[in-house]
Image (cartoon, rainbow, N blue to C red; front, side, top):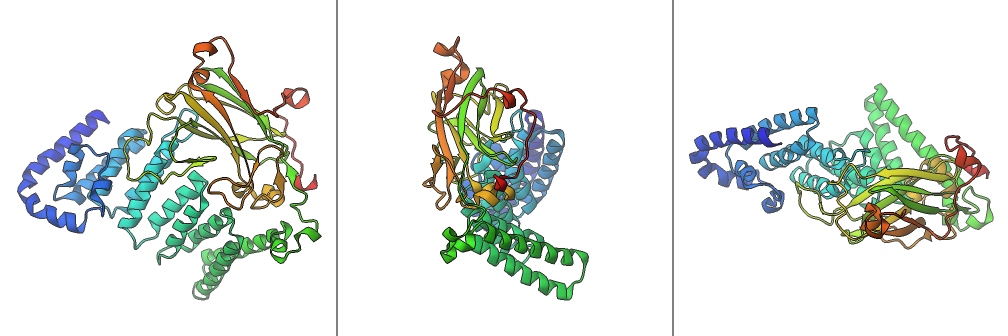
Length: 456
């Protein structure tokens, strides 16, 4: 940001000199009427020169200038320079809903490594920015929705949090009808299928009421979409045995989820070069659509739960990533022909993957809650239709009521960096049940078989 930032703040300083006398009377009014509710928290991470601007009496004008400047940084891809400006604009004018929303998107999605993996250490700041913006703008749905979206799409975990934020968004009068569907989808990922059905019925009746007054194409399409979603849900509730469980007759009929399918998970991690891993393994599911979460993190990374992190445990928006001296990588292992094989190169991103600690954990996590519909048709929402002889878990923290696959492997910094005793050796860790792949599929990994899972 350097030179541009200094020039900009220099110009602001000149304006401040002329406004100094007025500030004495305007500052108390700004603090009472416009300042963020928790000024100390909101200003966290700002330098003294940035906060000086926040004390000026012409906050909205300065906020506008800064936001125009931030837009130019977006256009040139200078993302590091954008974050301080976003933070300053939201402090100067906390009713800038678009700046909050853009800032959340920027922080949550734009900081990536060379392979386009997001730096999830920024997620606490993205969530905190949404929480602050929602508190400052309670009369509009937007920041409640955006915060819910971060939990639903980016975190893709701890779904009660997405449900909570989307519920608040739906309660706002300005919530567009088409976006209300996200509450139903978040209820589905949370395993509340009855709640999802009830929400669809509510949306359907609201859409019919609008149709009486408005016969436009968009209104009619909205009715059709909701009705189609309801029909699909009711069919799936029956075929997956969801209703039968409630009626106590699940054991009497051959639902699509019976018998449970053994996914046969196994994994091996090889350090092929310093900071470069190859992750291989098995997953006994032929249809495409399985993505297994893999996490590599410091063993002492804070606020972790199996397969994730409680990302809103930190408070306040920080200009540097949370735990900037810590390493946290998250990726997806795509399965085809019952195996996965992925190379993960962290050698080009030492800032994102500093590897300063001594011990590291590699986590493998799979939950059917976020699986595509054709996989859920066998596994169901809560995993009744799948099992694993070695790694099935139904007791994971924050995931009550759902069967998951979860296991961990351990590595050291010396192994990952190929130092010390590992200079001339290939570091390898694997699950006890891993079997090396040989023969046909090993020689032709690009040939994809696409059978029906339910037909097996």
